[in-house]
Amino acid sequence: MDRHSVDWEGPCVALVTPFDSEGRIDEAAFRRNVELCLGNGVAGLLVSGCTGEFWALSKDERKRLYRICVDAAHARVPVIGGAGAIRTEDAIELADAALEAGCAGAMILPPFFVKPSADDIVAHYQAVADAVRIPILLYNIPSAAVNALTPPLVDRLADIETVVAIKESSFDFNNFYKTIELAGDRIRVFGQGYPGLLVGASGSFHVHANYWDERSWEGYRAFRRGDHARARALQAQSTAIEATFTENGRNYYVSVKTAMNLFGRPGGYPRLPLRPLDEPHLSEMRSKLEERGLVDVAPSGTVVQAAVAE
Image (tube, rainbow, N blue to C red; front, side, top):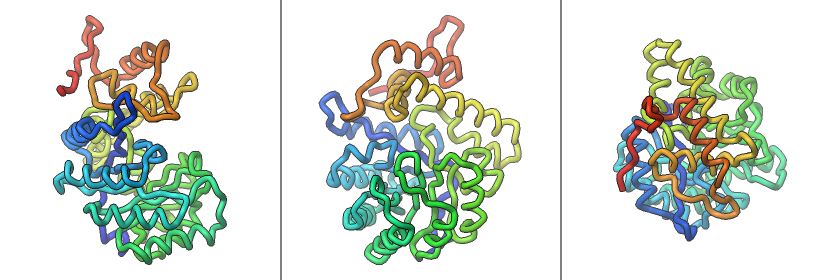
């Protein structure tokens, strides 16, 4: 396998996992969100990732979400199952479950919290590749996972047969570009939005489609048709919207769900230890998100975007 073994391309969405007020997975809300995202034109679905609060899910819950997502997608786009885990045995078990559920690939973090050596990290991925024949999407997010998949390390990992892509979320453009330079001939590199596309990214696994409309896909289309002014404008708008999520100490993942709920999409509740936002954050977020163009607002101040029907 290599980058040519998969058809992953364009803007894919990292799905939230909606919970109800009792902390149970709201499967109906999850399915509604899948339909909304597909209706907005996403090219792939990532389930049980960071945005999906994988750390708050049991292994059985993650396996069930793989099955639900594959069923809801109806083979319209690839589904990638988040299979990151500290223990290699757990990553293997989850990757195997993703394959059994019909996922097109498994996204795997380097073991987090602990600090394995580079050789340990390579051995971790090699063990998964040896045990389960499923295309692997590497995931580099050192701000949360502690351990970075540096460009030289990705260069080594790209030689593992089933490693076909990376979700590069270091938020460091130099790191991103060096990753493409060293490994882009063998694996697809996703991330960095419009700037990433300029240097050869295959697309992105973003959060936008959970809370935004077709504009979450339009920037990619604008780039592909050569409308760079439109692509840059949408990049600037999405960056401004995302900044709202962490202002004044807000948790990003809670804020994503809050934005969804504020404007009629099925975000649901977070699961402990994360808690829903309350005032004054709710009013502040609504005002800033309207101001930054997440939704259209009529002169009367009412939101034009319709609420999602139950």
